[in-house]
Length: 88
Image (cartoon, rainbow, N blue to C red; front, side, top):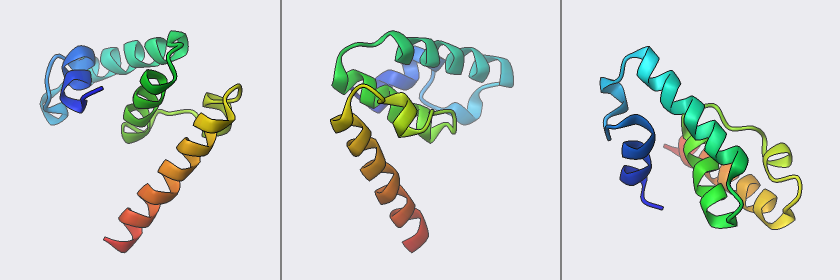
C-alpha cells in the first residue's frame, strides 16, 4: 500500500493540512472501519501504521491480538518511530 493512495482513498487529498475537521474526522472514521474488517495481514498493518501516524491506532496488543507476528512488527514500528523522533 502506498501512502499517497491511502491518503487519497480516505481523505480525498494527499495534504492533510488542507482538510477541515469534518473531512478529517470522516476519513479517520472510515479508516478505522476498514482496519476493523481487513483480513489481509499486510494491508491491516499498513492501515494500522497510518492510524498510528494520525494518533488514532489501538495499541499493538489490542490491534493484533490474534496475530503475534503482526503484534511484534507493530511493537518494533513503535520503538523505531520513537527512536527516530527522540534522536532527531
